[in-house]
Every structure is written in structure tokens, then in C-alpha cells.
Length: 471
Image (cartoon, rainbow, N blue to C red; front, top):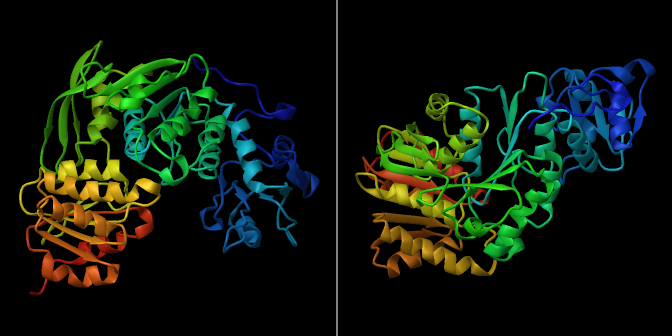
């Protein structure tokens, strides 16, 4: 299934670039002395503070900062070359001049990816894609040396930077692909060309651009136009739209429904300490444990097990990989402060991820207080979806609701209209923080979740520092 591709122009050594080859691939102009044309370039960054020896520094013009002004700082930090769209005054090293650095870096990454015959797993979806990416990488890491998307580098700049981090040691890659509009997935997939593509769910995200769930499906599935006929679509079979979708290539489903190719049985949540379940497929079953909080992680475990099996891994290796999984910042992290148990899930939120968070949160023993904020980019359905979350919070027996944000007031309304008693809304986040000592009690379970733009990490950080509250 996997074989090495044709080397870059000029017969240069496989799997690394030079300023000269970068100019040829991007159609740019090399600027520098003759000796520097053939220096080795490895990896790419956009922030001069992240430069390592040999890197390509990509000069990006931002709304507030122009990367071109940091080019010489990048050279001083060890960059071998810069990619620029205007001349660099008194450059301390070679650079390639192009019309658009963003377009050029995507062209370069697409070419570079084709030099590698390793299996590449693409991960996308409206919810759970980062957890799935991390867990798949943890599982594959039991057998392969794996490159995975770092942090939130899942967009049209982050993906090429990730691909350009591929090197000789890597034996597999797991690339997260995030989008917010039509056409983006096609551009990402044209670079990534995944051999296996995981779609976690078609949910209520970026509806301002995508319109409705069918629009989300259409945008996400642009990926399949850029996969070979021997590619594999690994889809959430519990999702109403994905279960019926024909990707035009081999399709394998995962989920809780018995009809799925990979399914989970005997799921047991061990409070916030982890989840165990039987992972079942045609080739047998084994018991797996995920050492993290949140029932939704079972779906990531199923996708990980399927990816591992497809790449020839044994069940024992997959089991060990699941045990090595750890959540990343702001995603279902459990912190016991000595006063409360904090569920820090503030990185982002949409109706699907919030429902999943409340589902597990409602199963915890003790008083449960949810601190929730606006879910952004939901378009015309925003008001109804916020009210529905409030009603769902009451259905899951959430004892108290504290909200901040314009739309979050509707979460409170939905909660109260369904029968909830303890609900407070604060237009300003600072007022919410000031009121916490009078609301949160010793021994409480506290969930913090909102869209990233609401910056609820400030609330989570405040809660982490508090060992006791004066009353």
C-alpha cells in the first residue's frame, strides 16, 4: 500500500529540501550566494522564537505583525532559509521570494508529502478530532515512530508546517484537519493525501458558513476526492449522515451500534479515573482502558483500534497504546484542587461537544456545577441550540448552572424552563469570577466549557489556584 515516491527536482537526496529546490518547487526566485543554494533545510516554522537549526522560516503578514521583520532574527536562531513575499533588507542568509508565502508553503508541503511512502492518517470531524488524533498517535506509537499534529496546527498554515516536519525517522503520521468553510478541506486534503481518513462526527459547528448538517457533511467529505482508490474511510457509524454516506472507497464504521465494524460493549466509567470497554470487531474482541475522563473517548478508542488493526498492529499493542493516551490542554482535564474537582474542558465548545461533556459530568457523584459560555458560529440556529443545551443540562441532573455571554443567557433560560432552580447569568466574565466564592462549595464537581473565543481558560485558571474559598 505504501511506497516511496519520486524525489524532488534535480535528483536531490530524498526527504530534505534546499533553498534551490524550494525555489524550483514554488516557482519562486532564489536570493543569496551560490554556496547557500544547496544548504540543507529541515522543518518549517512561522514564529522566529520556534526556530531550530536548519529550519525554513516562513514570513507571514498578519493583521498586527509582519513576519518579514523577524527574518534576520530567524537566521540568528539557526534558520537555513526564509520564504518571503517581499525583499528582506540586508538579509543574513538566503531566501526564496514568492508572490504569496501562504500559497507557496502549501505547494511546498504538497510536494514534500509525496516523498514519503509512510501511512498517513487524516483526522477530521465537528467534535472530538483532537482527542482522536492524540489517541490514534498514542496507539500507532506502540509500533511506529509517529509524527502528529502539534497543538492546533490543523488549518491551511498549520497543516503544511506539520507536513514539512516529516523526516527520515518517521514511519507514520497522524494529521488533524480543521475547517470552517467550503473548499478548505479540499485544499488541506490535496496536501495531506491521507491513506486512512477518520471522521469523528458531523455536528453543529461553523454553521454561519456551512448552513446546516448537510453542509457540514459536504464540506468535511471533500477529503475523499484526494484519496487513492486503495484509501480507507473510517467513519462514525452512529452518526446519521455518515452511516449512510458513500465515500467511493472502502468504508469501515465504528460506534456503539451493533451494526458497526468496530463497536464498544460493556462500557464502564470509573468516575474521573478512566473508562473501560470491550472493543469488538469481526476479528475478535479485547478489553481496553482509557486512563482519562469522558465517555466520548470511547469513540476515539474505537477509531484508534481500527486504525491500528488496519496497519497490522496486534491487540496487545493497541491496548498498551490506549493506556498511554493523555488529554491535551483544555480538553476534559481533571484537576483536584483540594477544594473542588475541576473538569477543565474550556478549549472549545459546540452543541455536540457540550452534550458529550454534560453526559459524563452528570454521572459524577456529588454536587455538579457547570460554568458555561457562548457557543459561537452557529448561525440562524444559535438561539435554539443554546436553549436546548440548557434543557439537556437539566435532563442530565446538573445541580447548578453559571453562565456568561450574550447567548449563554439562553442556556440559563432553557435550564430554568425545564425545571432547573440554581441558575445565574453574568453578562461580564469578571462579574462571574467575582461571584464564584459565594456559589462554588467545597467538594463540588465544576465543569468549565465555552467556545475558544470566550476565553473561559481565565475562569479555569482562577479555579485551579484556589485551595479554599472565604465565606
